[in-house]
Amino acid sequence: MLYRRTDFEKMVNHSFKYVEKLNSPMEIALCVENYNEVYKTYNDVISKGAVSVLEPTNQPWGQRTCYIADPEGNLIEIGSFQK
Image (cartoon, rainbow, N blue to C red; front, side, top):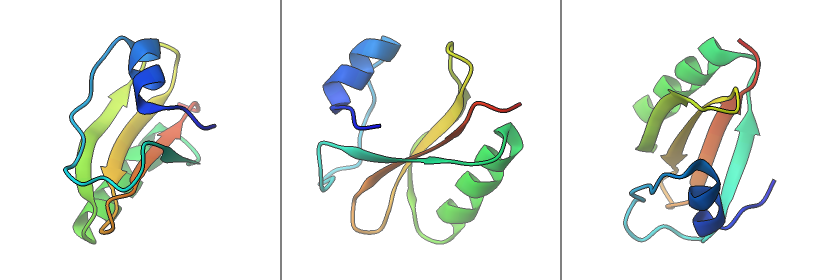
C-alpha cells in the first residue's frame, strides 16, 4: 500500500517523529509471518544499522507494526496481522 505520511497519521490519529533527511514522503511496507517476527525482524535490522522510527506497536486495527529508516533514509514499515 502507498500512503502519504500525512494521510497515514490522520488514519491512526497519531503524529510520528521521522528521521531527519528522510528520502521520500512515502514508505515501503513489508509483511512478516506473525507478531513475533515483527519484533525479531525489527531487532535484526536495527542491529545492522537501521534507525528506529517507531518500535513494534499493536495497532487498533489488529496489526503489529514498526517503522525503521534504512541507512539511506528510506522509511520502511514492518508488520503483521497474524498473532
